[in-house]
Length: 348
Image 1 (cartoon, one colour):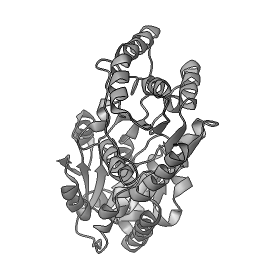
Image 2: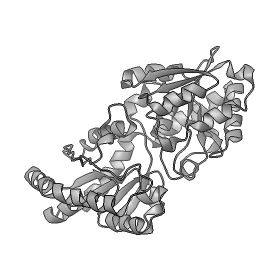
Image 3: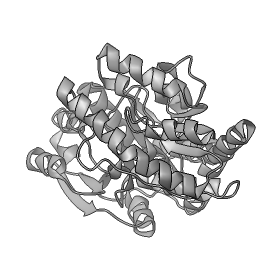
Image 4: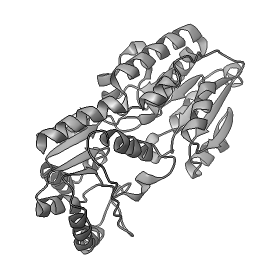
């Protein structure tokens, strides 16, 4: 069940994740994709909401509820696995009416970035009505005591195997990659601040590559960035693999302390050394021997990590190889969704 339209954008990480999940879960159950979107309003990305907006939002949910109920009744599902959309309770109500189990996959929470106590309380109450929550990253820490399991993003086994014989060889230019759709919470401005602290002779050797949809946030960075930038736009998996093989490192700029970064696992599968903020989630899953950490929101620390990767090709290859092996052991979609399938089966 998908109720957020943006999740199905062609080149988004969410879209890749959803279809990987469908493919893997189909090995254990017969999965059908069901979508139902609010046409006018969403709480996603809103820093503040008025009481009027809140009331209109929930009124619209109630208006579309009967249609959703009829459609799902005719499908006769055994259970519903829903990608959580902030404070959307319709599917839970439908599951109660149909007397079937409900499961949330959570990749974002209202309380993660907001301080409204009532809505945070309401969100926990909503999640507690589900049979079980699968949380990407460490978001389970925010919803305790709701039954949950923390999981990480990943890649498919075929994608990972596609780089098995790949070897990074340093070229004249040092290619830095940012993969995916650039959003406000990614805080990519930190890399521009880091560049300003680095020697001009190093910057002249660097190129920043954007692989993903081009938006105004990227164009704004292009205007002020002191190094050469290449805008590749969105690409199919096949072309993404070709581009990732050209990259010398993958960059992660920022996000919630509890967030999981899908791009990390694509970088790691391509044997790119990864530069990332030392968030609570990344510290939990990864050791220093497989990633170049910097302190979150600290441009000086970020510049130091960039210089280390640039000046230490042997160390970079060693860390990248450790990350590649770790992904193969722990972070393949097939393994993650096998765990999810087992948990679902235990509730049927």
